[in-house]
Image 1 (cartoon, rainbow, N blue to C red):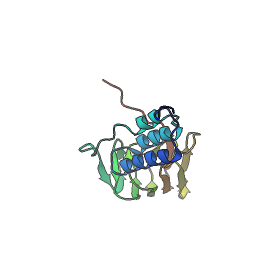
Image 2 (cartoon, one colour):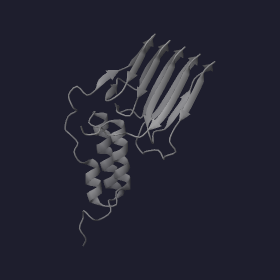
Image 3 (tube, one colour):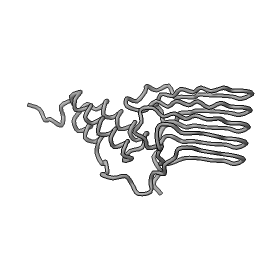
Length: 188
């Protein structure tokens, strides 16, 4: 018999590891991007060792002060950027931008939802939404004297990640959705 750590993981072991990661993401112990990277490693694991590494280091509780809960974003005659680790109150985020600029970076958002909905409007402004690579995105909404652009990297969908549905109506505005890889902070 071979070493169990060197044997390829079974589908059941992979599913169990993916469920552990999904729970950790829902509890705020992993960001959406961290979840995507780790669950990808689970499904690509060729040994039990690699499976263990993909689920290693999950803290029992979230980092204190790491997740501000947000249910809506209003920007009027100003600039509003939502970056870093933050939590969605539920599956729907309201967005209102008038004569300003709003940027939402979803790469570190904490959620246990299978669908994230962002809905609202932008008048005489701009909205930029950044999603992690490998997340499915649907962009809809009226565009009157406006531009609406969806730029996603040509990578396969990461299993278990939520679908992001964006419905933003724009008047004399720009709405842009881009995917970017997660970049770890550089040591100082």
